[in-house]
Structure formats: structure tokens, C-alpha cells
Length: 381
Ligand code: MEV
Image 1 (cartoon, rainbow, N blue to C red):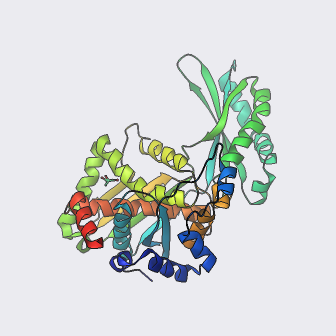
Image 2 (cartoon, rainbow, N blue to C red):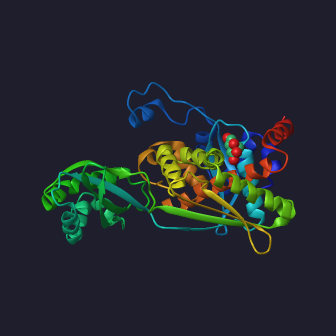
Image 3 (cartoon, rainbow, N blue to C red):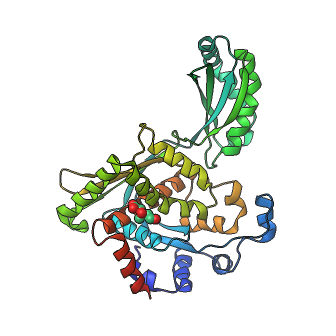
């Protein structure tokens, strides 16, 4: 059931929560967790980080009408910037009226890096490491039997020889299926666990051992098609495509475009207790993968003259462990989202980023962002 967003926005927070609660079977206790002051007790907060002296509150909202592969989502979001959630809802509504988003992914594969220095013959050592891949994977997996029993674990090993101009180094990658976890802890532990074996095989010295946030084996891809009549006809389509070409040509615009995408993604990453810095670092690094910082979203006109929008980016998030387990609102966010896997959550996050981008591009190519914000502000008063 799609929501009439103008009506939804005109309701009080309690009325909006009632609609979400009904649709997601939230208990009275759940409702109190959302609307009460301070869902996170000081006691719990103190177990999460060091030097805790209190908690910090921000508005908790929902993006409505997010439709992916035929399933409708309410996406909980936490943030302080006025207008962004309104424009995300506008983008979501527009896409939903056109059938929503189609998604695919590359699985939940994280990369753990082990740097090996002081190897006399690095190219030979590279082959020696590859020859003993099975043994390396076994040593990694022995470190995390829980992940292995959940169907994940180290599934491959890659080895490169790199040079910093002065000396060669070997960089070994453990490819780890993190399943429904973000996987940072498991991957970091595995990189340390295999290090003695890698030193024995190469005769070198392992230095940096940690995961890579360029999670380019944990990609999500989403796309939507918007019929031209929904965006003001051919000229509306052309304006959005032209806005994309501006971002493609100019890193100054690409950065702002991608910030707009993050306006959708990061508030939902916070709401689910995931690591915002990991998602940001991965996204921006991926945006620069060609050597030039580029827009993460692509907008094209198809043969029928309609608008095609797509987004591909790394998304290292989980639905188990870490803050998702501890923070009561993070747990509730997952309940409201109604996602069954980390991959499904990753797709929702990418989609809400694309909704934010679409909503903003519609404003920027029509009345302008400021005027649209001003009108919206007057309407909601
Ligand atoms: C503002 O937070 C984000 C925008 O500037 C994004 C964009 O220009 O695409 C509106």
C-alpha cells in the first residue's frame, strides 16, 4: 500500500508512528522506544564506546514508498538537515509510481589485506602463496568457526606485488563472505591469524593487517525507469540527463551530487546502527575508481525517450552484531525495514540514496532547490 506523502507529512509524529506501527506490527513497547526520550540508556551507551559521558539525540523519521523488486519498505532515517527527507520521499514516490527499483548484488564479500615486506623474490613468493591458498583459507576459517557455520568465511585468496617506487611489497587479500554481518571484526581477526603462515611461506615480514573499506566485492546495483510524462516530458528528461553530464564532467559538481546521495544513505545507516564512515569511505573511493572523481548515479535517456537511472556502490553493512545488536532503536529500525539479510539492507540503502538524488535533481532542474524548500516549509507551517 503506497502512502500519500503529502498527507503523511501533514500528520503529527504520533499519527505517523501509528501508521508505521500498524503496518509493521509494532508493540506498544516498540512505540515507546521510538517516541520516548532516550531510547539508548546511559548504561548501554557506556558499553558501546570509551569515555562515554551521555547520549546525543537527533530526529528519527521514515522515508515512505521505497519500492524495490516489488517489495515496499519504510526506511527509518536519523538526521538533522531540513528538506532532505522530504526530497527522498519525493524521489521514492516518483520511482514507485513507475514500478520502483530493480536490484542485484555481488554478495557480501569483504576484503582483508595483509602487507608483506622484506621478501627477496616477491614474484616467486606470490606464486608460492597462491599454491597454498587452501591452507591459508583453512587457517583463516579456523579463526571464525561461527561465521563458517553460518555459511560464510574465507572463500578465496588473491595476491599482488606492488611497488612504492623504492621497494616491492606483497599484498595478500583474503576474500571473506561476511554473510549478514558487516564483518570488520571477523576479517581483521583472520588477517592476523594467517600472518605467521604467510611469513613462513614467503620468508618475509607481515606489517599492516586489516580489512579494506574499498568493498568492491560487496557491491549493490539498483536501477529505475521513469516515464517522461512524470518528469515534465522530454525537456524534463533532458534536464536531468544534462545535470548528470555536468556531474560527470566536473568533480566539484560530482562531489555535491554524491553528497546528495549520501543524504539518503547515511541517515538510514545511522538508524540501523551501521558504520557510516565505512560506507562513506567505500562510496567515495568507488566514485574515484577511474582515476577521476565521478558521480555515483547515472542518468540516461532510453530509446523511448524515458529516464533511466542507476546506482552502483559498495555497501558494507550488517544486520547482526555490533551496534545493531545493542542499540534498541537500531533493532527497531530493522523491524520497521523488514529486511531478511544484510544484502537486502544494502539494496534498500542504495535505493534510498537514489531516491534522494532523484528528488533533488527534480528540484534543481525545475523550480530550484531553495524555492522548493521554501514552498515546502510554508506548506508544513
Ligand atoms: C544538500 O544537502 C545536497 C544537495 O546539494 C545535493 C545536490 O546538489 O545534488 C541538494
